[in-house]
Length: 232
Image (cartoon, rainbow, N blue to C red; front, side, top):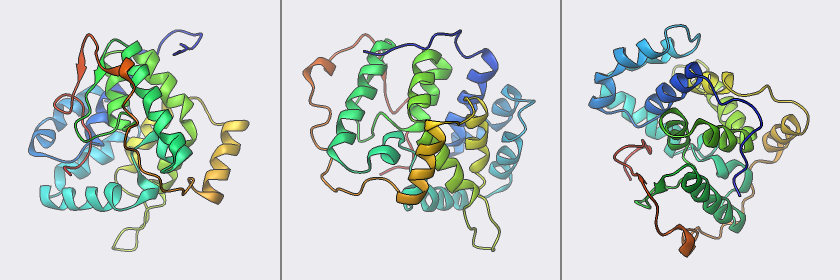
């Protein structure tokens, strides 16, 4: 079952960073752009996020949307799904997704299957910011290698003008700044992912949510309240 870490939960500053990163890693919309001042006020001392917020402010919405889709939807190395890096599109990933659903339930909420998967980074960050920081911490640290892989991919992103670094790298730098430093087996896992990439067995994910134990819950995490990426 879900095991909580043996230390005090993430503090308020960490939860604020998670809240802002959950928002800015979502698909850009007029509603997101209208909240940038409020988001910036939540993290006045963060060393990474001001640059991304400034980029979102100064760029046309249609360009932000195009860049977001090109970055997160068209490149597997920048997947926002935490289980993808460890399991690829294999049957083992299906089991990992069920465990995410169980973790949400343990936190007192229920994930609604509305075309999105429960391991989306934005959803986990919002869970931690607004519902249960310990559960989100556990999910993030269990998939720490995947988070780090996404950070590396965004930091190394090649832009059309020849520069390096995606604007969204700032959000991953901020998230990683709230997590333990990689060392030992976790650092080795990142090195293996860099060298080998995720498993490539293509089997599909249909049926991963068929566990009848996941059919009901006391509350809902739905796409209306948790950002879940670009429209499909």
